[in-house]
Image (cartoon, rainbow, N blue to C red; front, side, top):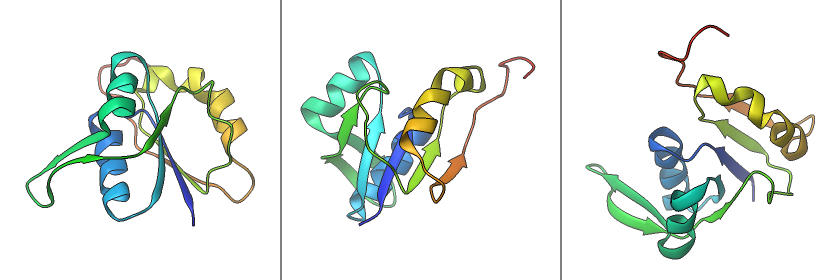
Length: 111
């Protein structure tokens, strides 16, 4: 089974992770702080007019804790956080990993 890694499990990343998990995919979410604690304790909360309201069991960890290779990585962080995830992307990917950037750069300044 392919491994999906979501880097930045906010609104966009959380939605992607939720729909993938609902489809039975192997999903790991990179999160921090209270959001990470909530995912670990209750599961990832997906609220969708299309698919309903779900708490989905997904793997969740910090960037430092993640030590696998992903087949597909969704990068869903703010533009100013890109430098801070470079090491994670190198560690979590190999030559065949598909990396899909879905970035929020509005109002984050020049890059």
